[in-house]
Length: 509
Image (cartoon, rainbow, N blue to C red; front, side):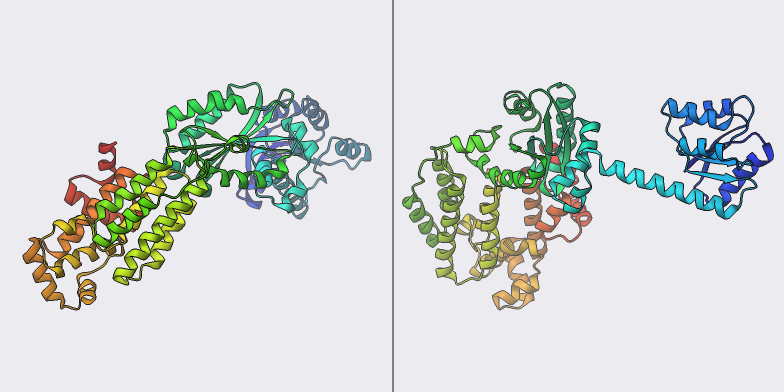
């Protein structure tokens, strides 16, 4: 708490300064004065939290000084010290909204109580200000916090910000996905620049880390005119040129700010339309209602080709089946839910065809991949999920060109399948029913590399792929490639590649 002491008697003034530091080390005396005129100048300049002042002083008495400050709307709390118990003094002091009136000689317990009351008053005012900050008002509505909503005073909010929580609001959302950490600062600066250059609306920009998005809440100033057209024609193209193609732009509106949770939930569902509309499209309820999706016909010939590829163990043909499916979906306007549903169906067909042949138990892994497809809102997510899905199978195009023994081929297949789980030579030997020593010797003899060198090389290639195709953090990449410590992964990567992962990512991009 920042304090100014105004007292004409030097011993009392200096004594008060020392006493305050003993009562509480956090009390900071930022100024002191021996009369009202100097006190007025110091208080006006420093704007302390509290003034401890005498009444009778030369040049200007304490009450005149305080009245002048109040007239000029200089905010500060005041404790009056006086040797006079005259009711008129006390009455005038109270009319100037002082915190306390203490008679000299000052009793320390009374002073402590008075100071404590001031602290509590300051703390309460700070909480109220924070509660009524525009950002906090919006967050309270956003999360539907009933207890806090009841404390929101709409009249105070309207007076302070010129908006009402009971009036319409519009919402512009930027979903940044995997690029959230990398792009959120630039995106926020761009949105705030948009707001600063417009006289048509007020707004507040919020970061929503768990949703990987930025939310701009918009309140129109003139005739409550919608800002949607302006954002669609001007703001989205500008943002797209700066942020790239993997950003989703969404628009929503609510009759009142209190309905914000329902609108945001609807916008969350609408994100998947990004899969079927042109890049940098502003997705809204009106846009979706205007769509007339073509009925999606399932391509049986693609399914048959995929099943045949599974039975023949031809990874390349299987990948081509999914590629043809992507190309087919681009030919017409389809519902994103239908598109994902049929991709998932093809995955199930491929999985069950594979399981009939191998009886391998990979159900949980497959379900995890299919869940990712169901939740996908950009094509990159679907393609990465399909890539991981195909990695679950114990064969690849490499197998058809590999002249190694069946034992070593199966060991390589297990490395490709379980590399991210940190599988060991001993575990693979157990799965193949041979001794660790025998497998190690055969692996070295036929491939020219040890098991450790092979799995290390495979992990390095996967790290490169993830650095090239995603914005994942190093700790996430480490987890996906079987390293428990991202620092150790970086050390191994540098030994193999000659540079650190982040340096490699920068050199590629």
